[in-house]
Image (tube, helix red, strand yellow):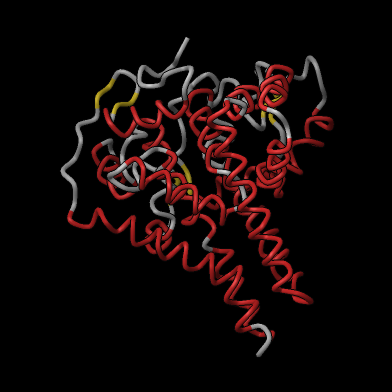
Amino acid sequence: MAPYAWIDESDPDQGADAMARTRTAGTVSVPRRPARPDRSISVWLTAVAIALGVFQLIALPLGLLPRDAAWGWTLVPLTLLTTPFWSLIHEAVHGTLTGERGLNDRCGRVLAVLYGSPFVLLKAGHLLHHRYSRTRERAEIYDPATTTWGRAALGYYPRLFGGLYLLEVAALLLALLPAAAVRELGRRLDAPDTVAGPIFARVGQPGVLRRFRTDAAAIVILYAAALLAYGSHCWMLLAALGGRAVVISWSDNAYHYGTDLDAPRDALNLRLPRPLDALALNFHLHGVHHRHPGLRWYELPDAFRDGGGNYDLGWFTAAGRQIRGPVAAK
């Protein structure tokens, strides 16, 4: 049974289009707000993000580090900008980054290559997250009838400290497999407590796998060239990627940790200091996003205020409490 009327169970891409087109959440229609004059800001932010990615991987190692290794410190703010960088990919996943589908997907693919994982994989995974959040996808939950806290922790903590991003990068290996093998892997991995099976089944579709392979090849070539360009300073790039892995993995489930199960449309709205909420492109209003996934990032604050404007927790409190570890299912 599809929990959302606007999602086609067989096609996550159509689900994204429907979200952007109908602007609905469940059975509650969300009126499309008038486009703001600053709608093009997303395109400009995408251009800035691409420029910073090119700086990190090409300009910095070739033009600046040979002059002074102190330029390597610029990787610190770039790593701290991981959240807004992912937020732009997230907009593209939902079809709301630009007003035109083709441009939206092209921008998403370029950003995802710089991120290090193919866009079709990130898109399928995130849309399935909306479909199965707190049902099949509930990262911290374990069943005490079948396992122990300690065994659950063996998988939980590596995922929290960077493992999620590393899995997204490791998925590049799927490009080496025939489509039938990817789909068979999806069938074997299909289980009630994971979305890996549906993700692999989606990636294994011929047209999707073709795009996956193209982007995977671009990622391998780009990052191999970057590592060569960094030369003896390659540890700097690896450290920056490690920081990205931690930021992505730590943030991913902070909006859902400890929340009610079997409630895909529920998520936390987390409080951030005013300068940081804009920097995160309002990603902290995750509860609003789950209820109204077709809203653009700059429309979320108005929807939040219309819904009462109540925060569930502070962002840092919500992120920090994940260190408590796995939670037993009740």
